[in-house]
Length: 363
Ligand SMILES: C[S@@+](CC[C@H](N)C(=O)[O-])C[C@H]1O[C@@H](n2cnc3c(N)ncnc32)[C@H](O)[C@@H]1O
Image 1 (cartoon, rainbow, N blue to C red):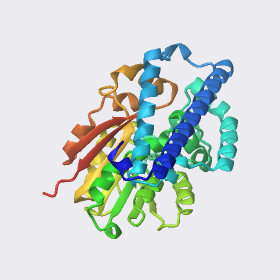
Image 2: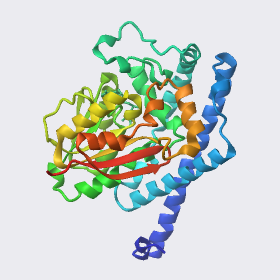
Image 3: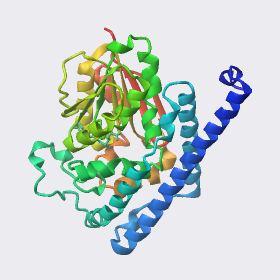
């Protein structure tokens, strides 16, 4: 019996067990759905829009075993952190079934155009009404061959589900792993005075998780895509707490004053940036963070920590348009952090993600 269980009544232990099993079953159902979706989608794509299939590396039974183990580990950790009160249990079971059905249908309607881009390796397919001039060169592309890149409401509407299917239903569980280190540092402070910035906040999933863990802090989000910010605003304005302040801007030129934030989060951005821009985003994060402040990064696993998953890592850059990923998976993020002045406190791998926790020294 764990120390936490020893404080519970037999009834509470019983309901705790039921809840835990329900969560595990729910996650398994999402994983089965995601894998089935991807299998079906791959078969259809091969038939109608054949691509350089022979370049994709087959995944061995050993790799599948590792993936299953990592899947079970993150589910267990996600459960434990909810149980420890880092975020509410409700966050583990979130589903809006009508939105899911509508978005899933739209996703299928959009699939042929993504497959066509993939087949033709066309990553600069944008409608004329999008003014690309406003964006940096590295950003003007259909990442993942997705329609309109990050630059339309349609793309913003499909994005969360696409990520969820890609990660077999654990995208939010991976995002939530940033919360424990943030709690550890920020619980020492007066919650009402805390400021947290989420860089590349996208559609607001990380801000929503931050809001659950920190109901009374001031939250800020910055992203290059106004369509994604609009979607984030739609999600976050449904919450009863204060609305996070959202701004359109670049991670490498953050539109905030020096030494302002207590904490910065950054989820799934760095693998989509060229190496020099990665350093600039880290330098800028350092600038706007208060001395003593903390930065938590979540991004893809890298080759150094997961060499056994190399075929899967390589497939990602072949099948999706991810031009900076091959460099990212070999990049030394700790070196970038230290170069900016950060002290690296923790580096950890969980499921398909890697986390860096770093601190801006007080002097
Ligand atoms: C893979 S998505 C991740 C979004 C979000 N953090 C999440 O967890 O889903 C990458 C996001 O980074 C944004 N982005 C890319 N380059 C950026 C930059 N230089 N500055 C700010 N945002 C950027 C994109 O618009 C997109 O919303």
